[in-house]
Amino acid sequence: MEISKPISGVRSQLQLWGPLTALALSIFITALDSVMLPVATTNITGDLGVPVSGIQAAFALFSLAAAATYLTGGKLGDIYGRKQIYRTGLILYSLGIIAAMIAPNLLVLIAGWSIVRGIGMGLLLPSVFGLILANYAGPQRAVAFGVIGATAPTGAIVGPLLMGWMATHLHWRAVFIIDLILIAGVLLLIRLIGVTERRPGAKLDWLSTALAALGIGLLILGPTLASQQSAIGLPQVILISGTGIVALILLLLRNQRLSAQGKEPLFHLKLYKNRQFSAGWSTLLLFFFQMGAIILTVPIFLQTVAQYDALQSAYAMVPMFIGAALGGIASSWIIQRLSNRLFMQLSLMLVIVGLTWMRLVMSPSVEVGQLLLPVFVLGLGFGAGLAQSPNIILTAVRPEQQGEAAGLNTTAQDMGVGLGAGIVGSLFLSQITGDDAMRLVLLILMGVAALDFIAASLLPADSPD
Image 1 (tube, rainbow, N blue to C red):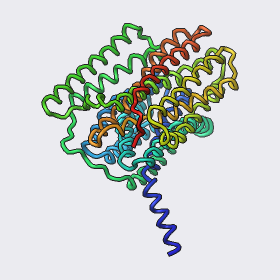
Image 2 (cartoon, helix red, strand yellow; image 1 turned 180 degrees about the vertical axis):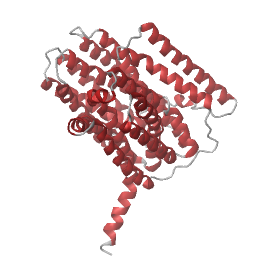
Image 3 (cartoon, helix red, strand yellow; image 1 turned 90 degrees about the vertical axis):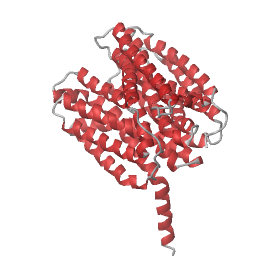
Image 4 (tube, rainbow, N blue to C red; image 1 turned 120 degrees about the vertical axis):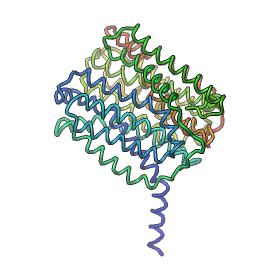
């Protein structure tokens, strides 16, 4: 009896937190992969015999493939069950990694790493948030979102270091073996995740799916090309993104028509009539807009203007990811003691303080030591706010709406990063020869953070369940 009690206790804890372990590990893998390949750009271009622009295209196409699939991934979770779609997404993701590991040329790398892995990501992420809602409630749900929020920046810290060591001492392809081992671990833990029910009557409208993929993809593609200093000019950027906007307008009209006919749209616009959902979604979009701009512009400024080497610029950014991890962990405790509105406002105040502090010290002669604290404070704000935003957004809707809401949630993330990096990044790159380019970017982001604060102020005062 004395032996059976500890065993029973371990089993119950494994049943309780095993699902979160699997979900957090998959988030860690995606975060790891999102930041480690740029470290080995020289190795990859030399191995495959392609220019740097080819590798940049592979990165951009992955983001586009993922962002264009999120809404569909959320809807498929309603139709087939989120656990099944999570498993399918993970398998597709692993197939993309295998393709990258054996890719003999750029075409295979893009087909596997960018397209197949991107579609897998589009199925995976909405399912993660839906499965947290299905497996946890109350304080445990807040803890789960806090862990997920801390896991991503942890992966962002480990990724460049792991790839740097592998590319230097072994081979850039060897790092994918670790990816596959971690994915195998997740597949073993999936059995601990509770089976989610399918929503009766849920259907996928293929025309809406095509319009969503085209609209979101082109909307992000325009600024992405501009931020990469491509050969296209402003008229082409406007044409590409404008076509994306037209496709999204057609999607909204299609959704309205299907709803009026009593049929199933890709997502219901009435979700945005929910104040907590719409304010939380807007806050999340602007959070990621700021993060996308910072992650792109700060390292470029430090290397091209402040004359940092790659390692120094990495050191300067690490405190942001450490702060984000700590902010994510602390958020699960803090949000249980504050209202949604006050919690998000405090997170954004940290962001505004960090951006203001960075603007005060930023110059062509800035030293790493001057950036450590302001970047850390900025990371705290990002980590806390981004960890609990999905909690606030997804607990605002009914269970039958959670698949659509999860798809819209992850779409806001990629749209925010893409638009932030594209719009602010293209402005920065056009002014990069000037000493005040980074200060201008930070001033713009301070304005975006203030707008984000206003959006957070529209949240209801009650805390998430």
